Length: 178
Image (cartoon, rainbow, N blue to C red; front, side, top):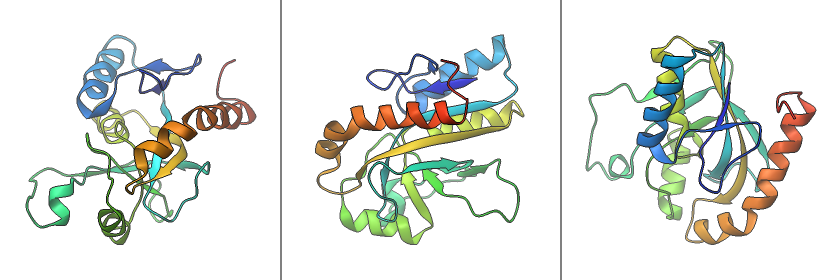
């Protein structure tokens, strides 16, 4: 099953599950309850914490939910906030998820120092739901922006090209069913 966020980030070969952690979790849960897939592949855009370049394609099976309050030591969580279906010992790009987009260069550097590579709003929910249903899962992302003061402007400017690059990448891999 190939899924995507929705709104302006849709693909003809993917089921939209909603934007952010809550919508994506609710809707993906529904899909898994009614027709449990063998594998879940999430496709979407992502912001880079500095190591990955704009329009780079990233594949990952590891996600985290580290919120901005954690960076300033203003919050903690009792939850397990990292989910991975990656084979042990294989280096993977960690995708951080939050309902907020990082727009601070300082925060971008802090996330990078914690081992985060990129951010996408929905991926942690996808990985957590997949874990709950014991479904292997992963994601394919195209970098649209850096997580700095220009994040939104760059996302808007680069979004259409990123969607096209994702389409082409999945087509080369035979995964877009188009």
